[in-house]
Length: 323
Image (cartoon, rainbow, N blue to C red; front, side, top):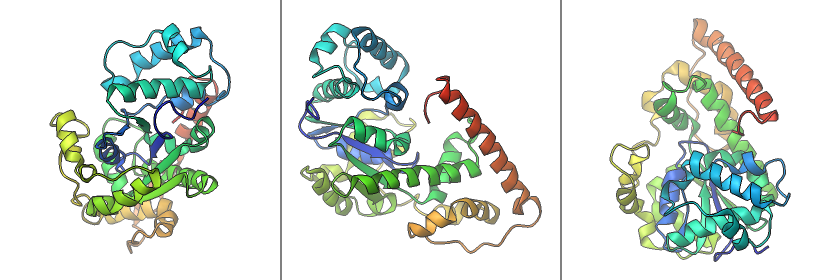
């Protein structure tokens, strides 16, 4: 099948949650050529085991029904979901890649664009799968200081999701980044690109110009003003309402103001090696006294290992989607 029914290979934005993936999505969507829909999340679940198996009309119908009833991905879709027979006829072949390309291409055409992309943070762990599905796809990995990521994750989900604690945020940050970078090393510089949240918010145009060169896309000044599109599409107070504001560095380095020494010590014990590899500044904090200096780390580590082990078992039996 052709790599894409639209003009250019797919663009996949990946990165740990709260690392600026949505900001980057709105920057690229500010180009009239590119459309990146809301997060999909479903590609590893549907195609992770059998990425090359041909699909039947019944399977296409079931996939469309599930996507259009369960996933926020379709939040900007216009009109009814496609009918399976017509959708199958539009596919270049019956492969999962053709299914996805047709779905994203139709979405892209609805928005008047000619090249599609995807912005799903968990796909940092599934770059190899996506690269197998789309052998010409390009991957943009945005990285942010893990301590700021941890604060943002705890702020958004810490009171709602029992499994999200400081240890989880540190392990998750390390896991996702190392997986994406390992895949990127295999893909090479023509298909994998890294940029930093801190630099992107400080100098949007300066960071977007080389990114556009990597993607083979023209840079447009409005791409450095994603707040214009953000105000048009995001309601005040919504989950991603920060994109309604111009890019700024107000939340860069907040860990220096908001993290306690005990929290800094714990995070750096888990993720310090990667922080240093990436060139982020090290905070000189001593080991806390009492429970905070060891017992807390052991308790949170045990909780993490038990929960992750349980998830892997459930995923093996298809009872939980990939994360």
